[in-house]
Amino acid sequence: MMNAHDLRARGIAQDTVRLLRMPDACHVRDTRPRAGPGVDANDWPDDRIAPVEPVDPLPYAVIAVPDDPGISLDRSGDCHVRSLDRTLGLTAATIDDDMTVQPNATPTTETIMTTAYDTKLGLYIAGEWLSGDGRETRDVLNPATGAGQAALPLANAADLDRALEATQRGFIAWRATPPEKRAAILVRTAQLLRERGDHIARIATLEQGKIQAEAKGEVAFAAALLDFHAAEGLRVYGRVLPRPSGTRSLVLHQPVGPVAAFCAWNFPIMNVVRKIAPAVAAGCSIIIKPSEETAGSAVEVMRCFEDAGLPGDVAQCVFGVPDMVSRHLLASPITRKLSFTGSVPVGKALMKLAADTMMRTTMELGGHGPVLVFDDCDLEKTLDTLVAHKFRNAGQVCVAPTRFHVQDGIYDRFAAGFAERTRALKIGDGMDAASQMGPMANARRPDAIAELVGDATGHGAKLLAGGDYGGQGGFFFQPTVLADVPLSARAMNEEPFGPVALLSRFATDEDAVTEANRLPFGLAAYCFTENGRRQNMLGDAIEAGMIAINNVRLSYPDSPFGGVKESGHGSEDGPEGIAAHLVTKAVHIS
Image (cartoon, rainbow, N blue to C red; front, side, top):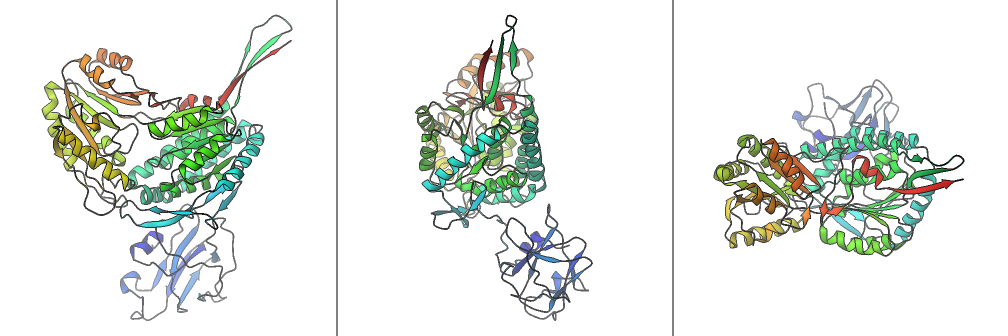
């Protein structure tokens, strides 16, 4: 069977590509001489009929048809040429009655490059997709190669004003929409996300770099978030307070209003869903500005919301110059809540802007995850778990384990085992199924990691693995292990946000807790010990919003996700995620 992936694998890059609806079976018959131009005998079976598969999840097939009338279509059902427009409206067929393809018969069939980055970038405002016409653009790059893939239109001030007006209209209507209808739209969005998961995951890898297995896992988790918030939105309860006869006091929870949300590039699918789902479930409208570097993933997620029936005024998706967009949206009295996922410095700057209108804020900021490894742990299991988790997404995870504090008795064995496993990791293009770690997301990150590694070794740290660029083009950096890293090293005080593990020793429980709490960050922490009493002590003593003991799982749809100290405030996910989008009102009736 031949599908779109096969076409790309065979190097078909500039042929006319048509989308065919296939209610039954459809075949491409090549009647040209085998020695003719463009004919590869290995591409076709002896009978020269190539079945074509639909492109999941839609019943359409992508076929490459060179400009040669000797290619025809056989069918047991009607075959119609489809427009490449995302509305998927039927256009006039470009096939004669005898099913012979007529090259260039109609302009309704577009000629496109059969690149795997098959999404049409745009702004989504007031239910319309806006292109780059009359707007500045920027390139979306492939981190594995550094090459440009598509041009992204950037919003101007007029676009942002239109988005604000739409979100105000959307809020007025959406807050009055029955929760059951909101829930149904979220459930349908989850279904579409799962159906289109392979397509969306491929786009995420091509623009962010993570391996396909991680991108597909991100799709699955994002869909689970939608399902949870759909149900949780039905459980926004108030209460009635006891009063003397003839009087009554009510406590109501109501949507806060239009939300401005900004999210990072490290989880380009999940971050968008994590912002939109609780807002929509609570009855809020939202303007989201995802990262321009991973725009394709966000666009495809927005299409899922759109196709699920979410009204166009309820959710807007804009891209632009970050400083301009954030200042414009946060200065507007329409915006009543700020939700941000990103670095600590940017979060602080946004909070200052939000203070001018006293809007609600949820801030999920950076961390510097301590990992406390005690000598009573299952060492081999701990090593297997931590190495895999440390280097997922090339270490570009806010809750990534970073500072590995290991008890003296097992430190040397831990360091040797960690380095051995790290050196065995295969780094490569995230689209390669053999790759275990992909490139970093942009050109800035490898240089930043190289600086931190150089600083650490300059302060006496020992390089046990990696420590250099990947040498494959693109934005690669080797998975790196540094041992005996002193506290004076920058990496021990600044969030590395990359594939570097920092190892150091401790002697007592008190030493471990002191080091875990030393920094002003408090997002995530990890502990590995079989001592139950110690587990309880660590859960109480460590200053972090999330702690994993003998595992590395911190994120569940029904569990709050957020940090303390300079890692932010407020929580996403769980009931707390919807509560963050509600205001409390007391009504006293006589």
